[in-house]
Length: 426
Image (cartoon, rainbow, N blue to C red; front, side, top):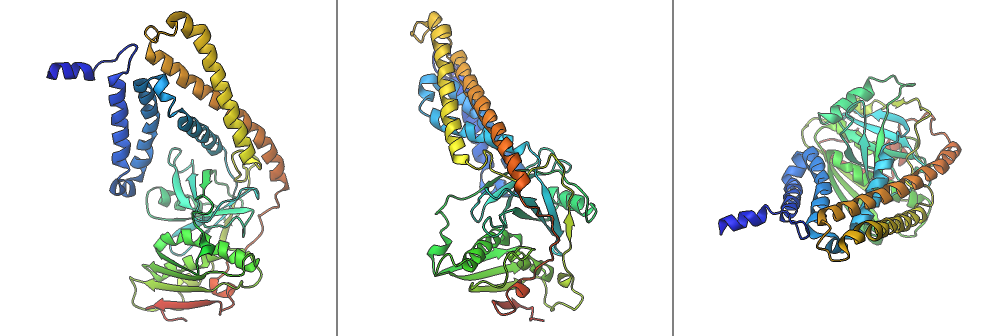
């Protein structure tokens, strides 16, 4: 009995389900599940990130195990994922234009990218950033702090120096001259929550609680509400309570990021915002020469001709392009499969499904799926980039000097209630 079980487990059937392929798919799935556990994902993000590339052999071995007929049940999902992944790959190959950066006394750096006005993203979006001079392989996700409504030409992220990749990035940016330097950066995204998932205006009050750099998702929410209240898009704005905890008083400069460095708006909008900031590792108030009071001077980067603003993968009419790509690539896939079946497999198998190997048939179908998606998606991406290049020339220059704006100055001294534990107002 044990011998028969081992024989069945190691059997790769020629014209039936392959047990070995199913076992390999199971191992890949278990590896992805294990690295997705919260403790591993949070402490070893790179292991979690790279281990999930096992989805490729997982899909391949699952198809080999199930066969073409059964795999058709999951084909729509796999096909849409392949289109999305191909578009993301093409977007991540380009270099984006990094306009400026500014250093905060807390050890964080804000990166400001040029953005196409047609790119819209919701608050709490995420952007993957890759800096080749720091690491060619590492991609790290960061919360987008800018609002596409308040800053149509800029996309910003804030990165805290926490060692490793972030420390190398901080040192690289700080070693550049105040103006005229260049830093090659690639991005993927931004990825936004679906519209309506976060209905900020549907509540009378919003309570946001953060610790340290965890304030960044709330910055985008507040900036969006700042814009909507200033533009009077709605008669009723929610009352906002931001409770933030910092280790040191130097980290209080994160509050200045609640409004863009350039100001963004003239005057203070009618937004009921209350901020309660707590410092946990200091018991003495700040002194007069506290670095928090020194302005954060920006570093301006020199644009290269090959750098482009962050833009949608398929340009302005992205949804129309995406529909055309999905339908065209699927039609091309069906055409290739029909030609394969009629002129190559049918003369051998005669629809018996007992002559032509399942593995070869499955791999040919997967190959045609990849070829059709890559060809159509690549052609659409290149065509849309031509339009994006023309649009980039029309984007007004964002290379203008900006002075850091204090939250209290923006609010006119009375628009924000300030309450700092163990930190009396100076």
